[in-house]
Amino acid sequence: MKKEYWINVQHVDNRLVIFLNGATVWDSGIVHDDPELNAFINITEHLIEHISHSTELIFEGFNDTYNADDSSTDLNPWHFQYRVFTRVVDAAGIVLGEQDMLAPYNEKHLSNPNIRAINNCYQIVRKDGEFKVVSNSLSQNFYN
Image (cartoon, rainbow, N blue to C red; front, side):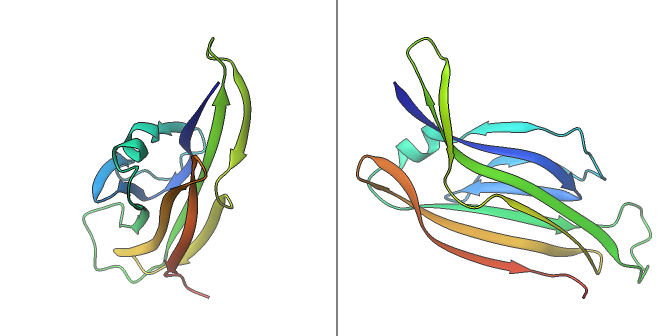
């Protein structure tokens, strides 16, 4: 049996970029309302590269305009959904189980266009033989 560490992105409405220790591991590009998106990103090797110190996992979501006219004052929708989890697989590659490393994120709001809508940063360390989230900071920009 072995443990793998994954991110599942299931919905992006605008642009979502995922960084590990400053390196881009996934970038959706500008996507508008894509309910079919179901991307799986294996971050196991990235975590192992930094096994002796903490790893910073950052989700940055951007609320960009969809056209060349960026003078509009209309609010834009943004929606980001992701899940970070541990997967246990056997020697044959059969998935034996999954467990969330953090609460799944699924937020949808309106905000001014051309801003960073979310910045969700997690610190991950190896403790007791597995990677764990030890801290989290979140900022969101939305219209109430």
